[in-house]
Length: 241
Image (cartoon, rainbow, N blue to C red; front, side, top):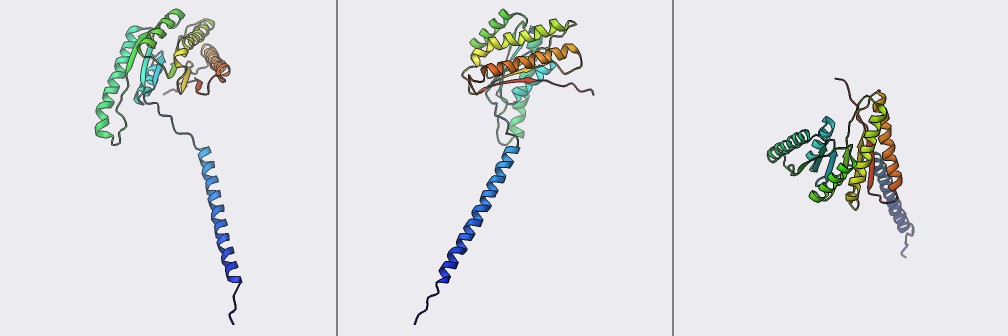
């Protein structure tokens, strides 16, 4: 007589089901942990290569530093300032920096990335004259064709707080109004208002608040127009050395 042990198949099935359940639970927990880490970690910086950046006030030390950083990251930079000699000197220095990067890149970079492929352009513009800003915007549109990132770095400080705040705010307003149409339709558009360097001086503080409020209002008004528009107010801080 042959006796069949019915417990063996049942035990084997339960054993494999238990192993499968434990493995699935482990994978679920692992995926959940990875999602938490991904949420906590900052997003990688966006590749700005081949973006066109317009820096208003590029002849200032801060404006030139920003323009240099954009050029270093493969952006084409359009420099604007009211002093034609200063802006041409700034553009010349930026071009020399790009040439230096091109010379260093082949021997010190293995993977590629790109020697500096930036183009540097310079235009004179009187920021206190809205008609001059419009004419400059039209010339930039004819020459360049598009703008992806607009950085407004205007520092026009004098003794009168109301006069200074008004001029800086209206310069931001007219500049955004003039260049914004050529930025519509781009995949990503960023408008950055750089406030005067942080200080306890009332003139600086009033200008800072005016620019921040302007950027916030623009964001509120245009947030339903496109999700690709970004408005940012940036407030640099000067540190004593």
